[in-house]
Length: 444
Image (cartoon, rainbow, N blue to C red):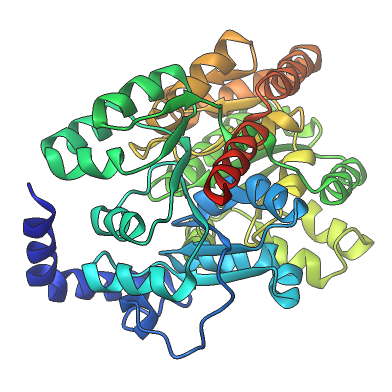
């Protein structure tokens, strides 16, 4: 398919695509600005100063993955333009970079829809010195507009599954030219690099995964550990759950509690399950499911209202079976306060979610069978003895309880996770060095 045919089809289908986007925004909540002029590359604000490093992080996961890169760019004195396509990504950027937005060293914007005129006007408005696309966010007209504006592009922390490669190759020359329009590609693994080259990427090297370089909030981690110690419960985190997984784990928790009551094991140190949905629009539905299941629960926001680590918050938590994690940006608190972490997104065919933060904090990790987005990381972590992979929610809880009953084994897995994360760090430094090399070449 040619880019012109692609653009024509995009224009013809745009009413349907915008309707779908509007429905998605209504379901998800938050600020989407689906029909805002900036989504079409039309700007009322004056042009900002030219020359920022443009980082595109499409959604929540990519925004979090890009955090160590953006921090490193800011630390080296670069101005940053951060773009998103989803409300969750934008909200996370506003939360994490509030101080930088206030100082004007970082600016946020919507990435426009991939219409030729919109992407061309985006480049004219912001005039970036260089663009960094996180993981696998390539749009044909965006790449073409960057080339026309003389903006070199980097694809960083890039990954590609077999399924993604098949979809890409079905589009023929359209996506091959798009991948070929990226000046440098930094892959997460050798397997990703090989697939990316087959997709048409050039100047491909293996830098590793940005998620290994994440700088965790140690204050939140310390407070999470202290809260768990004061609480005295055995805490199991069920983190980053996605559609269909909450109910599976709620029913699995009921079965665990039922077996404990039947065998008289409820006199042991009490269990507390942390249920942490991936997206904020699902917090209320998870609460409704917990209520329908008859499981006593308390929301994390309620604990914060009660004074977080105070006696009232501890008392509320001791009366609950489940703590519903309905906050953003607190994964260090949740993981550090847990003895075991079950990481969702992998118990339904959704590709898995990032488990590296839990391993970095020394928390033994359990994942489900669906980990296509983290295939190499899961294989490497298993080889290092840092995680366990199971078939379903019931097996996950059984494995978690085994580790609770064998603290030495759990500690060994947790330490293996810490070591594994430490060994794989350095992706950001490799990409930053490449970016500054490209900027120096451009200046010369």
